[in-house]
Length: 423
Image 1 (cartoon, rainbow, N blue to C red):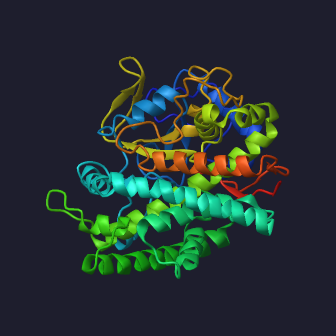
Image 2: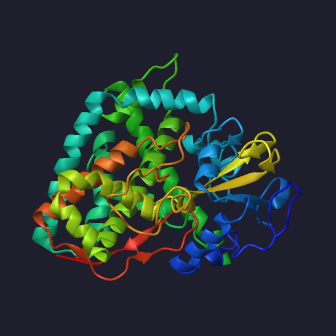
């Protein structure tokens, strides 16, 4: 580890190298212990990364709740535009596929967000909530009838995917192909791979992304000609200050909605079933009064599992993190917001490693730290989790996970490949 000369505390040496892909293959308790030690440091630790761009060739790790919130709510200083994922998207990729909203700053981000927000009408959201109940009921019917063994493929992945496709007005016929493209485009994000795969897999992911965006662009053109009452129609006809979503912007938004909405919710649902199995006293409390505890259980599942582990920001100007006398960060340097660590911050959460569905208050950052990039789909994700768990535990009160979830090592999201379950 080195110090880029910004006043960042790096002595004594950090307990682990967060820039090393091998760190993310360690057992969860070892990683949690490393983050706990980093939170005890007086300021963010700088991690060198020879693959990184920009000043310092690395990043400052923001691991405390207050620091992640400050960076999230100061968007004029902590920019998303250069790219929030690791590695940052190449310029030619962004030109070809368009910019995802997560990689935009104001005023362009605000303009697109206004268009999207206008499309999410009360009528559309009410219809989505009715649809969530129908899809959840149908999935539990299939569990009862077909007795599947993997909770992820049978339930957790299907619910958010079908709900989003229904909202967007995606016809039934191409849905399986679209889901395959989503899986190809996202399966290796943040995953350490051997050199041969690093060369080969991104091409597969880009081809999958191109096919997926081509499908929705064609649908957008059709909806412009003949609008219906779905979200695609609303997005391509919404007029905010004379602007509507272009075909490329629609494709980028659809990709974000599918990858972010499906992946994060499916992982939270799977982690939640396992957490409620591993903590029978919390499960008994929940099943004893679903009306009282379901909302708290959902928020605690999101806090405890934190589906998105990190996002990156770039400093627009020099900034003292924590106010005058705090850590000086220089313009052009990178910071990484570690949401999972912030959600275990001892300064905010009592007994943070405990799973407690009655935790109150619960100011977790599972949907982001606030500010303009707070998750647009937070309400939808909460509704999906609440409806699915209510349906599942009401009709199959003995449902439980069998063994540990099969996780995919990643520094980006807390991904579950498979989770065996019984009932």
